[in-house]
Length: 254
Image (cartoon, rainbow, N blue to C red; front, side, top):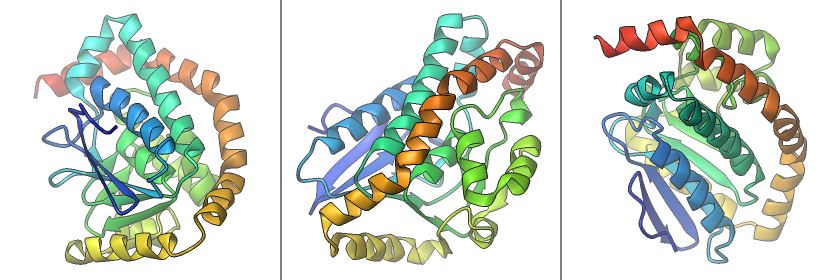
């Protein structure tokens, strides 16, 4: 269990599974990372020794931005586009259906799918200097991999519309102020804050915490399942657009 990961570093100790996304330089969500995230959540779900999962990123980023080379490859590969969109939808449902508590330790920028991964965790504690946002529109894409689901539920439709339609980023401190995340702290206190919160949850009845999480997430799981096909369809539509192609080629030429 927890062996043979390449895009993730996985460690388990004292009931806590720590999952570190590791795809330098910014931990962009590669195909391998998609697959390994799905696998590690399945393994942790079935691990009786796992009480809590902490998700973070290696280096200076949590997961900041798309894999532009992967986007380029997908421009002319419909099968790859379908695989990416399908795995994104499965990631959303997997994180919401994972019934053990999850903490996002946002050590640095969380952008696009990186922001979605953080916001789907139960509690987000972030470096106050980190930027958080979902600028899918900046590369000609719909925010179909969970952003359009979770942002309105966390901060309301008016704020969500603004940030998703413009792609405007927030600092973690601003994200805390509008209720997008639980807490923004200084980088040098981030580990203390995350470990203290983990200890607080683990001091409580594991059965009660898991049952409460399941009851909270039931409507989210139902909504994610009901909207998955529609969101995937909209994202696929934009992935095949001229605007997306032009945006990707402009990024690759920099």
